[in-house]
Image (cartoon, rainbow, N blue to C red):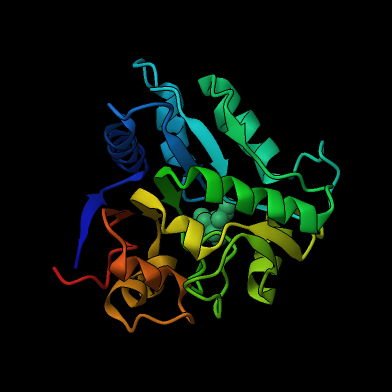
Length: 237
Ligand code: F6R
């Protein structure tokens, strides 16, 4: 299988190794690198390491991965606002291809698809993985040729999101599809914790199936799994 594994011993190590792999992937490219970034718990140490580093980051363009649909643009829970506060502004990243949660969904999806059809360039996709194998909000059943679209979170994902924000979040979301994720020249898949061990194993060693959307990575070029020992618990030694 065409992937590399970077095993991490603790949060700090995870952040440092993810930062190194990321910097390596965006260094020396022609033009501004296009980078998909996830939200969630998993990337927190990675983002912290980027902010703590004394070495200035190579400027890149942030490409949004997913977003709640139908919230006012200044809502603090919007993923793009969260990333802005936590990562992009502190790092001085000003170029952004973000989604408009409050726009007419059909025209917003068209705009996103047109952007990807036109540029067709993703240098790095940094992704987390959901316990059911989702990537972005490509929930089980998402086709491997799915495109950017409005979709619905599974009950399990929705409840996890409600819990995270301590309020009821929209169930409808905008997500990049697996087609856009497949454009990535490098994919950094981040996973932490024992609760991800089974799904991480299934995604890479199980059947490639739309029931586990992350299993598209089995055929993807340049995949780097950056994970702690717990998440890699079922991988062959
Ligand atoms: C978030 C996203 C999701 C998360 C996944 C894992 O933007 O795209 O696919 O990466 O739900 O979330 P955590 O890291 O919180 O376990």
